[in-house]
Length: 383
Image (cartoon, rainbow, N blue to C red; front, side, top):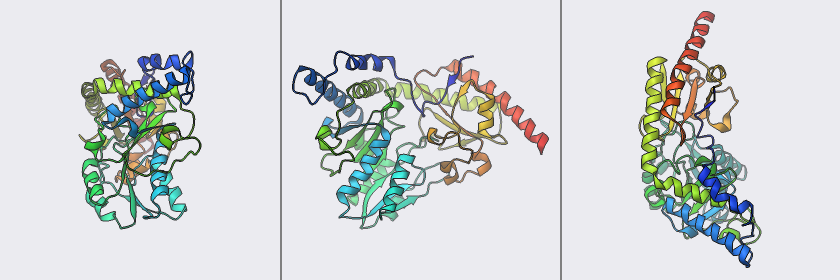
């Protein structure tokens, strides 16, 4: 039996249409986009076309898009870039306890350099309180960084409200939107953000390419110094093929964003209903409605998720975020939400995508139900 891929939040396959758009830039269109001859001009034009495609999906100006080597680099550029450029104005940052490691590790690095970071708690659904954000602000706060959608549970944060608070205090707001771009509307003005991270491989573009929206007028110190690529914000000859792929992926996502979100939401809920009916004692992790349309994180009581997935190798899912795969300790995000450790150990994240079918969902439900029954019977014998 072929494996059923339910791990789209970890990475997506490259869409064939994206690959087709990229192929010329591995061959005849090989020019350096900084060169002034025909080869370079063609490469430069391709980058600018892609910049416009990314900007169109985010609802910003093309010149506000900086291409990076991926989502983690974009997070680092946003956070370190703002801090380095504005450290004379303050030394305090605000974030949450359930951010992606690219944000949390960067904040911890800055703490070692003497900066102060407030890590806000979340409620049982994984949502941060805008009031908590407001209360955490000090005269020394220079950045707020809060993800749009959590990669493990899919919960959406109230960014528009937080954005209004940030604007009232003239503090830049960054969001890691790697999981939401291409799945939900991510118009920067509607979200109220000043910086937004995009990761190519989360929306059917290749790995190793990403983007950062930087609102016009923000001062940002580059991470990588050298020549004046990307408006002086990211030195290094651009990954033309990857950038073209990201642009095409954004164009494709924008074509049927609402329709695809609705299809995935229906499949996600079908999977949840089926598991709840056939398995029983299934606990939903995350917000019941305000979450990504493709993401279902559930805990099977009395079952350890690693054991469950090892008994069902046909199902490619995750026991947490991909960045924590292979660990046996409970998910830090789930623990921060107040999920009991024994329930957190039984958590499985199913994330659906462009090629997920109803047939696949219907195959997975009885397959997992049977293995959960086996594990629960073993547990009852031992106890």
